[in-house]
Amino acid sequence: MTDPNQADPEDTCRPVTIDGETIRVRGSGDLAEEDQEALTALVRAAKAKMTAEAPDQIGALQNRLRLAHEARREKERHLDDIRRALCNAGSMQDDDPYGHADLADVIRQVAAADEEMVGELNERVTGLDRRAARAEAALDRVRAFADRLNEYAESALRTEHRTIYAAIAADVRAKAATEPVPAAETASTPTD
Image 1: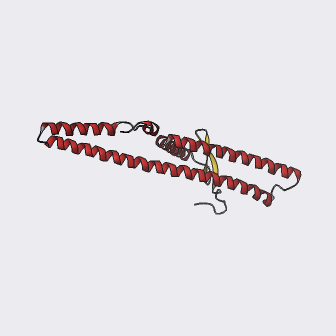
Image 2: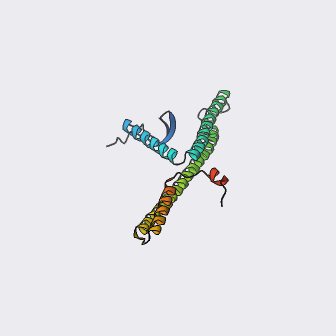
Image 3: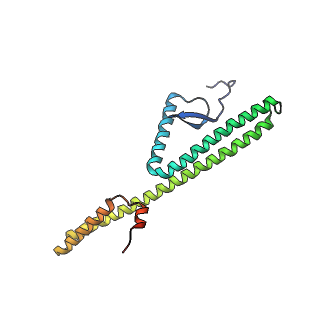
């Protein structure tokens, strides 16, 4: 049972370092060692999944996000310096809520821009997931078509029909098994 005289730790966002990178985690109190390990595993799994699914777009967006975070941290340091200078000059007191509110408002605006970029990254990853699922479903339909062609080949009465169906099925299977050609190469390939 908790002591009613003891205040609960404040539920806030606080920095946590994972693999040399600082992330912000919302909660109260310090993380236990097993919680830190679970958070580390979760962050690593999320990074691995995102990197495997869309490396080019994710890399560019992560770079933008990293730069935005660096800019925000630099802005926060700069605002702290300004606040200290104003306090030293006597323009505001250490506990002056008006000056602090103005500085905090700037920090909130920068944080909102960061969250917007994270949302954009999540939307793009979700879209890529959907495209990959549709592509895999299309390949499954092509493979099923090749299986039906093999069935036709087995039940065909004439030898030449069996040969044709089997060849078409083999060609369809080979095309479905090959790696996709990048868009730049297909655009320059002449069509008949």
